[in-house]
Image 1 (cartoon, one colour):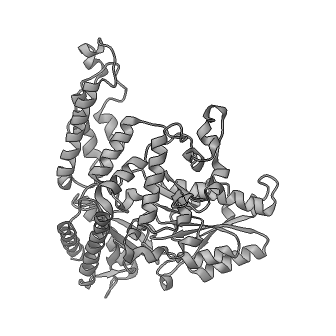
Image 2: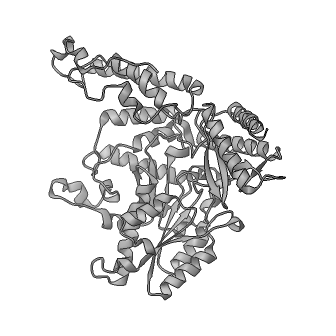
Image 3: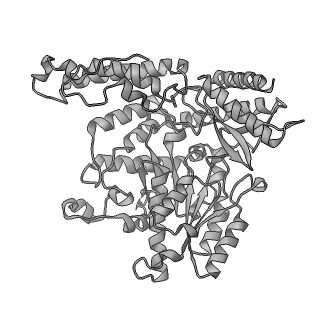
Length: 510
């Protein structure tokens, strides 16, 4: 890895320090962005050949670059050189076609362009008046996506009859979507109980399967729920690790009988660990018995539901209160982009709105516009709607569906490879584009031996730099996760990864 002299005094005599400071000089903007675009294009051309995981140690960058900020300016070429020689070699390359860990972080030329333009405009669209087009674009993009997902019109900002009762907002992450809906559900439950202020919070209970993302339990604590009242419902192979409605009903009824107030249920379509799917409609019916809020977390798998053959996973969504999905995972829209829809937008804004004097304006007072600040934790916000709209406008529904189907087909191909080798097992049925597999215990190899063999397999694979896989634990077994979906992946990458897995496994077994 190269090193570069970054002594702040190195550039003390550069003449541009004597010139007027113009950070948005049009010629600089053009020159810098041309260099940045060339870098991006070259990066995508070459990323496949880079080690997916970097070989660096904590603190390496402070040794590579100066530990103190420079006093004087430097040519932009110096900055770009340091990017190439010091920063890129320390990156985990999520864009690599050899990245199979976690869930994909997809991207596209249209999304990058949209994000670049939004960053250049740099609007802060907290109210409609603060940036009408930014708000209108977000509303339009969300309604377009709702139509792709075939969500009920009750979740849309605008319908053929005018403004709807529901609505959406683009947030940074699913964590935020969970937090704001938990707050709205909390306040609704307190109103139902006739609570004086927040005195009844210790009575409120929330529910989710034990496979639900850990961020849910974090969000519950942030929203003020007593950790003792967070119910994690056990799952097992009999439901393919999805939420069992009978167990949920039993838990909610027991709490109600004890004088507690069932408040919120989180349903997941495509869990992080194994892509399990909770039954949306059945859970909604049970929650309705207790007036509890139902939120659907479809962060990853929601994108697949733009394809008719996967839409059944959302059946019953018309009876839930909110749903979120993240196009930055699987719909070619770069971070950050989590789309939250609520059936009654006022239930959200009543808990989150702020109305300081300096933000008051006629458009807000008219009641005809959406002020997106009232559907999120903060006030300021990025122009996220542009990149999502540009993806849908540029590629169209058919191409986006083709993208999803191609990834699923490649995942099925990998699943077939695994099933054809009797050294391995597929641990749970494949959903979407994730395959959970492992070296199986056989002969003298115990389950504990198999767990250790799989740990070694994963470590050895990742050390090669030619693939990156992550793991989980399913049914007390250490399991490897093979997530297809990086935007540059083709069949040849899946085949190469499988060849590497077979070869590495053989070396371990021998």
